Length: 239
Image (cartoon, rainbow, N blue to C red; front, side, top):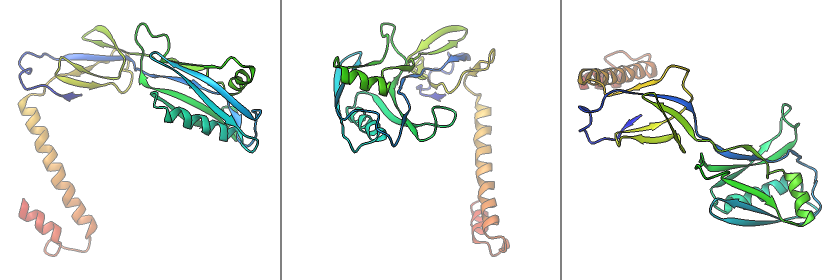
């Protein structure tokens, strides 16, 4: 929580409670795991469409005889990342628990979290209508949605709200960032500290910082005494 008000709210604003039911999340498309050093694609040129809620784009890539599956995945990831469509493409290495060692899959993740009421998906991928591109997409598998984009769900003083993001502002006074789901029945209480508590906290911060510097001086010069340790002498003068 970060206070962003102008100082006039404290007298009117009462304590309120936030309980996080669900964090917002991006859409994730995960491709199939392919052997890194093999070539499962027939050399040639392939195309696929990537449709967002505002535009449609066509991507074309060429597979050469000397390339490997990993080369092809890196090539497609580069195409998507350079297009600046708000989608991040990464390569995920396979493991014993997944689809085996020495394999990789292409992962596409939306930079946006959540989706509006009228949005079915944040993006969709489909191959061109020719048989070669369809077979290549079957190998890639990046047209399959592994995780739908979800909105955050939280209660504010017992009333349920949703947001596209995990960060938002309450009453132009507090910037809130949601980090994890709350334990059931344990909301976070948010309010202003009293002046006495705030001053006491600041004094303790000063004390802890001062003591920390003394510890550094003693630990870095263990052989020096109070009369010869220059940092301790300086800190004594400051205090």
